Image (tube, rainbow, N blue to C red; front, side):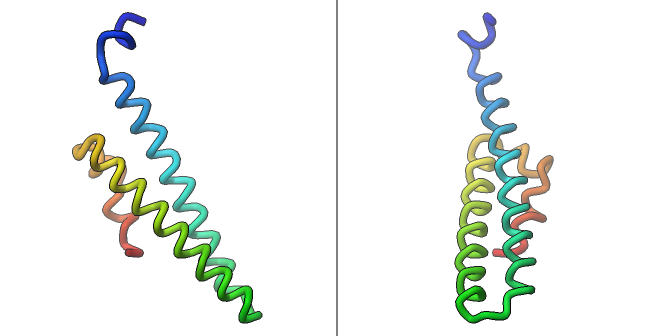
Length: 87
């Protein structure tokens, strides 16, 4: 418990792990949005899928930037560079 009160490192590590798990979830949402787009036939559904893809991309990009800002060294460990290929 002493470390939690006097050191910022455990808080940063837990923040990073939360951001990384959110990034994985957002990547899953993006993948699902692409799958839905591939199956959509109605023009309104296609438009909806485009918005979902755009929103998921924006969330992934934000999370990647947040992870890199918190700890640039972990960007390589989480392979966020590969995840950013859709931008």
